[in-house]
Length: 112
Image 1: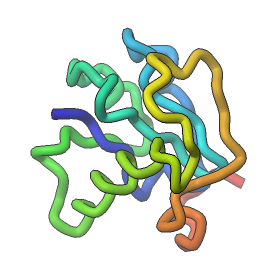
Image 2: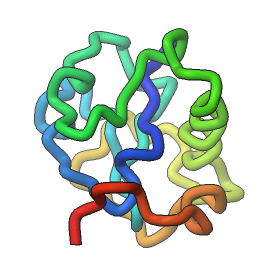
Image 3: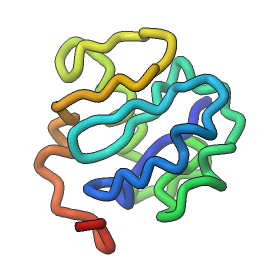
């Protein structure tokens, strides 16, 4: 099981969760951050660090945000970013986003 970044991160990307992650599994896309589901150790540190409450344990995702599980997983595949499983973000940023994020409306409270 992994943690999942959801709607509130779109166009915010506060990034407070990134340095807290002990396994460096949070990657930056153009409009949001993504947690690599195969690299996440499910420690939950990112949840408490996120000031916009965008991160959930996968099993606790509200039903209306359940599709973010697939968005976070698919982001790393060849059809989206092609990152695969690099074993750590190491400062990697991508200019692309999952199609579901790319066409999303800005989040309420997104930073300008």
